[in-house]
Length: 594
Image (tube, rainbow, N blue to C red):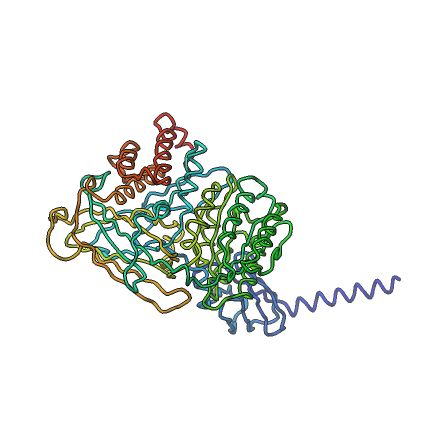
C-alpha cells in the first residue's frame, strides 16, 4: 500500500511539473459585439489543443495555453465567426464579433415617432404595485427650420384608454407611463369616412386654435382605412393562446377572457378555423384546429379552461406559432390571439428576450392580437412589446363590455388587416410653421438613446379612423390664421404595404390653409382636442399652460354626442378624474412619482 501511495505521489508531482512547463502562458481577454455590448457564452476554440471554452460574465475569458503564439476561433449564434492568430498570448485580447443582419434587426430599438431626442425632455414615471409600463418621454417642440419632416407609426391599439378607465373607476391616480394619447384617440374611431375608389386610405386635415395656448394652433390629421367587404373576407386561421397560470384565477382575468372568446366564436363562419393553446400548469394544444361550424365543440373547450401553475409564456408562444404555421391558410387571415396579464415567470421573461422571440416567431405572415387583463401584477410593457413586434395590435379588457367592443363590434378592425407596416410622414412648410409638437406617440427613453433606432410601422385594420394632432406655432412674421394663399401648411405621406406583401406603397395628401376657430370646428375635432387635454392632465404635461380639468370638461360637454355611450362614459371619466386630481390630493400624487 505504501509503495502504491508513493507511486501515486510521484505521478502527481510529475504531472504538476509537466503542466507548469507546458502551460506557462495564460491568455486573457473579453468579447463584445460591434455596439460594445459584452457577449457571454461565445464558443472559443484553441487551435493548438482543439479544446473548446466559453466566455463568461461581461464577455471575459481566461485560458491556459502552452506557447507564446496560438490561434483561436470564436463563434456565437447570430454573429459572424472569427478566427485569427495571436502572436503574444500574454497580451490582453479585445475581440469584437460582428452581428449578422438578422440579429441586428432583432436587437434594434424602434420608435413610435421621429419627433425629438431624449436630451432634457420631460419623463413621467409612477409605479403601481407590481405593474410595469414602458418609460416614456413626452415629445417636445421641434424647430421646423432644423427638421421640417417628422414620422409616426399608425396602428389600431386602444389599450391605454380602457386601462386608464380601470384606474379612474377605482378612484386611483393613473401611472404616467400608462397614458398613451394616440391610443386614447384610437378608442373613438372618430367620424369614419370611407375612402373612394381603390384607395386604401382617405386623409383629411384641419387647422384650428389651441385651447391650452392661445399663441399656438392645432393641426388635426385624420386617416381612415377602407372597409373590407364582409362577404369577401378571407377565411381565418385563429389560434387562441390563453394564459391559464395561477395568476389568472381571478374574476377579472380568465373568466373575463372566456366571456370575450365566447362572443367571438358566435361570429365565426364555417370557413374559419380555431385552435386553442394554453400555458400554465399544463402547456399544450387544448383544442386542435376546428371549423367555425362546430361552435359547440369550441365553446366547450373554452368553458373547460381552468387556471393554475406557473406562467411559461415563452413555451406557449412557441407552441401557438408552430400550430399557426402548420395550419396556415394562403391569402387568409392567420392570427394568434394572446390573452394574458403578461406576468411571465418561466422561460424567457425579460422584455428584450420576448422582443427577440416574437420577432422570430412572426416570420411567415402570422399576425398577433394581444388582449391584456388584470391588475396589480399587470405587465403592460411586456404585452405592448409583443403586439408591436408581432405585426399586431393591443387591447386591454377591463370588463365584459370592452371584450364585446374589441372582439365583436370592432371585429374587423381588430382581426382583419388592410395594410401592414403603416407610418405617416408629415413635411411642414417652414414659411408658415416655426415649431411643431406631436401630441402622443411618445417614445421609450431607451429607444431615443439608441442612435440606430428606426421607425416601426404598424398594422391598420378594416374601417379604422386614426387622428394625429400637432400643436404648431407660426413662423416669425407669418400669420397662419389669416393666410389665404394657395399651397399647404404641410404635406402628408402615408407609407404602407398590402397585407402579406413587401412592396412599399405611398399615398400623399396636402394639408390646406383651412383655419377655423375651435368653437366653430366639427364636433369630432373638438372632442379629440378634449381627449388630448385629458391625456396631458393625467401625465402632468408641462405644455398645458392655461387649461385644466374644467376646460377639458367644458370642451367635451360642448362636443360630445349624447346618444353615443362611449362619449357619455368619457364625460363621466373626466369628472371623476377631476375629483381624483383635485388640489387636495396633489400631495398624494406627487409622492408616487419616481
